[in-house]
Image (cartoon, rainbow, N blue to C red; front, top):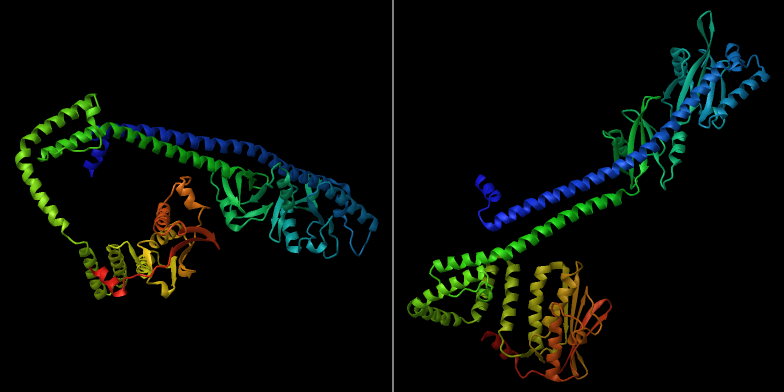
Amino acid sequence: MFDKISSILKPNTLKGKLLSMLMIAISIICVFSILITIVLWHISNKMLQHSMTEAMSYAAERLESVFDATSGIAVLMAEDPVLLNYVKEPVTNNKPEFARTGEITKALANYCNNNPYISYIYLWQNGKYRDEDGSIIRYSRYYPVASMIKEDSRRKLNEVAVEKNGKVEYCFLDEDKEGIFLTRVIHTIDDYTFINHGVLAIRLNVQRLLKDLSKANNTSEQTILLLANDEEVLFSSQKLPEAICKKILSMNREYKVLKINGKNYFVMERHFKLLGLRYFYMAYYENYHLLRSIYIITTVVIILVASILFFTSKHILDSITIHFDNLIKKMVIYSNGNFESIDVGYDYSKRNDEIGMVHQQFDKMADQIRTLINDNYVKQLLLKEAQFKQLEQQINPHFLYNTLETINWYSEAAGEHKIAQLVRALGSTLRSTLERSDIVTIKSELELVNNYMTIQKIRYENRLEYYIDADETLLNCRIPKITIQPIVENAIKYGLEENMDTCYIYIYVKQCGNDICITVKNTGSEFEENIIDKIKEQHVVPQGFGIGLRNIHDRLQLAYGQNYGLTVSNEDNMAVVRIKLPKIESELKEEEHVQTYNN
């Protein structure tokens, strides 16, 4: 293992050393380029983070200002003489004072209307949160009484207010998931002692506040604002999936990019000290995909350019070191006793530099040695080789066909029917090609096509379907050998090999008047207009069997005249080739035809 690593790091050849130097240089350039791209990516994110920090600070300041303003309202209400007199001596159902009640309600309305995010206000005498005698005062601009907090929640607010002894405190209630309550006691000082007379509770609609703040931006998409503790999201300007909330809460860095409802958001976090909560600001990252694509494309381009540079350098080195490799190749061959002239793919006789002179002198030396031994040793070798070639040429091509038949028997015996079928089809195809006559029957030509399609059917399975419909009265008519098969092969190439759908090929042999019409249709491809004429005039460079179609057309016209040949068209989303040739009955009987195959 160490030897292999050492050989890679310290190559022995000149080419290897130069390549190692190039690889090191290219790798350094590539690494530095990628690092620069990564730095630019982070700089762009930092710039976005900076701009978002300003927007986040503005939203956070507005949020804090609303809470501060609400706290200020609570302080003013606690010092309001109207409210203070009421909690000292509340109005009850048993002792109604409608004028006084209206004055209190008017005072609550003034405070409530000063802050659009105050949902409603509660006021009760200290400890009398049960509302047994109807002494609790409630005011709301839009909340019905039934939607307000229940007795247990009022008890909790009462306990918190008394415990804080005049300080404004923020509370969360289990029964109300969209609001935060500010509570404090209304008290007086008598002989340096605080006397609690009543409790004030204000509901702040945080959900509405966050929604309003999320709309205050200049982007096409709303900003998403969240307030959360360490375990769950408490308030959100937009309803988010639970999985997204977990990702947000698990943030452990300054910023993060998350996909929400198919859109990318740049997420930042700060602590909302007033409530002891985490505050998340999420802005729509409109250009994230573009920047990320540029980053990826730049990285790919750097790697691609480095690869191209490496292979280009390797090619240049190859063009230099190949001459030394050729010289070494000659030396190795000559050292083994082979002094024949070697074609290394380059003519050094026309090269006048040092490399050309070395090769020329070496070739001259080899020619002199070869001249010395040519009369004896080589002549004997050539004689033996000629005898071997003579024996080799005596092998009949039918030997290959007979070998395929043997493989077929063994495959059948072993139960490998697919292999047997494939070998039979290949053997039949080979037997057809061994036929010496250039003119065969339509039946023989269709057998060749069928054998060819059998092989292709095994290859492509369900992706290839073909149908042959031939008039039996025409099967003994004459046709030039290998006329239909190239057209079928062309249909498979363009209808199947370049298309993943199933290719259907239809072959029809019908009589048209006094002539024979052979039609080959296939799905999955179409012909250009006047393709054969364009190939003839060299307006189109033929690909695949384009030249085959032209040859078949020319061969038919030379044999039978200008009225016969090929026509191509597109019908019903299929490529169609029609072969027109005269109806000529074969003078060869079927038995004689079969005998020709076996010769």
